[in-house]
Length: 485
Length: 95
View 1 (cartoon, rainbow over the protein chains, first blue to last red):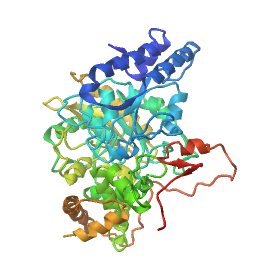
View 2: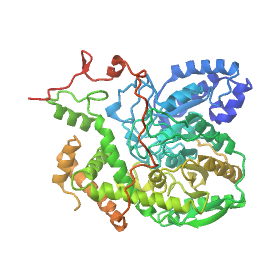
View 3: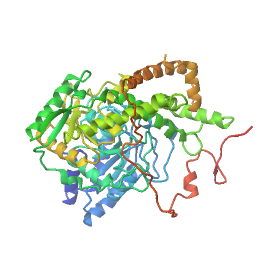
View 4: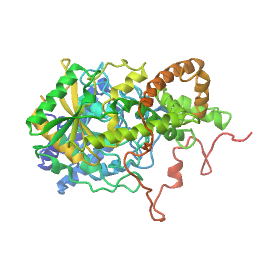
């Protein structure tokens, strides 16, 4: 196997044993990028020279006995995370020239761990989309079928891991933007509990929903990434002071006697028959591993998409007010006065989906409509959270499909925003309730497209998710395939 | 119709965005469709339900009022489209 194909833990073992070097690993990743990037377009920008320098440092650290799991590991970052001195665009024309003067807290954590940052991955503009088709820098293609989307909004981060263009990556999840592309690209993706990972230096989309999380090639790697990125951060006022366990301690345990909730609402009309079959099979696997599956009910599931598209757009309309052409980013030329400058700058700088969401959010917050939309949505959101509270009284974790269908075709849903929104139907609820979720590969469709199963748990119970996901991964032993590129 | 062209124009102004006639027509239809879908929220009885504005319980995050290292003026200004004398320059505000 080539170095770029390895998991974090396998590469770490080889580095520590002196069988290879971080420089060789970085070179292997860049050789892969050179070979397949034209077909995939997972990256917006690469930081090749800097990466090789970091790799040299990492090799020195390893020689001196550094025990960090990530030392010398090539990692990619969604281009929504600020990197000091390196362009951070958020997939938007309005930030096409933005070079942050500071690092996001998660970037600092990765650097301190000795990770080698390879590049910044493609994404839907401002993370608004489910297919990575709204990026100003062009679409990312699914490594399993280049005529199909990789999912979104963190499509570049998912595709880069699936195509072995990095070892692991970070993305962000506001309504499913880690779990859905992980499912569609056949990798592991986790959205941690809201407040678990610092959002300092994450370009804001919907502040009550956004959360950073990892994409990895297996569950053990997910635990390793979580150990590095989870921490209380005084720079993020929503960061929570809760002890962070060693996530690796949840691996290689059993789930005997666990209760797994199956919400009937997630198995109704609209789900692809092959997805349904694969997820049913996953249910049988966890039962065979000693868990008991019980039916639970999440009665407000059907309202989640509607709640989300009010809450998320309202918050976005406020967060995106800062892009006014004054302090950073694109500014329109030849505007006579300030108001014209604002309007021209924003109209030139934002793409159609971002404008649509700003408009929807502004409308929902505007005088006379606030109670009917924003207040109502926030009340239904409370009911959604109650549903989960009730369900977790009856079960340890919940098992659902991650996405109703495997990857769809490029362009298939771009003209119908509502259809696009509905592709996040199984992932949005976790963001509304603030709970963690993980998507793990659970099979392939007859066309050879990956399918994912999602596990959900209560606040700060990521350990439970890693434990069941690891048991599932070991027991299901899903055939190891690599996309033919 | 949930929303008409005049309202879309008004919201565009509030959003500091401008659209062509054609775009306004397209947006009106798309927003109307989305708002009609969102109407389903009215099926939920929310009498007496406290609106949920945070995903987890939060309190104000206070810290001691101590100066800590922060960006230099130069670093803070470096991304500005137009800079003059340590300030961001903008077009005329008052006629």
